[in-house]
Image (cartoon, rainbow, N blue to C red; front, side, top):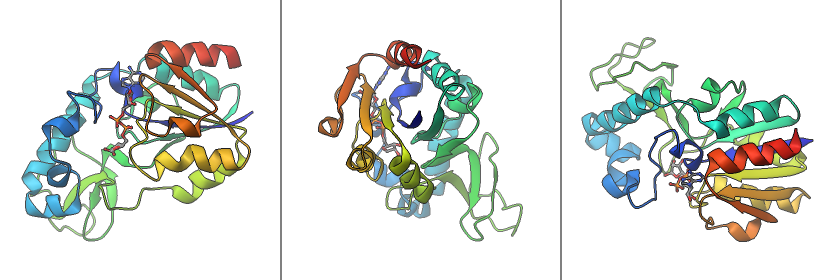
Length: 225
Ligand code: APR
């Protein structure tokens, strides 16, 4: 079966990584405009690098949980397109091979001047030079608010060809990802939500399974493999 999966911060929560909109979430302790926009980066690159250095270190210290591992198992039995909004590499470290990071990745760096990208050092600073153009214009390779997510053409294509669309651990707050269920459903896919709480776009799903991902995802995968 052709399945497209979208994961959000909730799948990494039980690996110890903060989500965004929970009461203790990242956006409760940092202003989005300060740390997740290109304007914020221009204004204070040191603050923005410090925010992503903290998240990069947390991601390195985290380990994949049973939900990440279950999705890797699913890939061995079905034609799975795995799209993540997450910037950690827990899917890869669980063994998933072709993960589509639509919001970028903490372990990648990008040059704001020439567009070159390369493996990010654990700690980035505004003084770092781009390996290609040697300018001090390096930034985290993260898609900030107001910027175009990566790989959208490939994602829309997968949504249109899938029999099943599954959203895991995402609140449905941010487009275009929050529109994926409607897009897939209009083309005949069944849409399933696995979440701890109901998302903002719960009405776009045919079925919902609520609970922690480390329990709901392995159980759901077990029914398919
Ligand atoms: N198991 C399953 N789901 C969980 C768990 C868990 N253990 N813990 C939390 N969740 C769910 C919450 O109920 C919520 O629906 O994960 C979701 C997290 O929502 P957000 O914090 O909004 O994260 P996400 O949906 O990934 O945000 C999308 O917004 O800020 C931008 O770029 C950022 O990629 C991010 C995007």
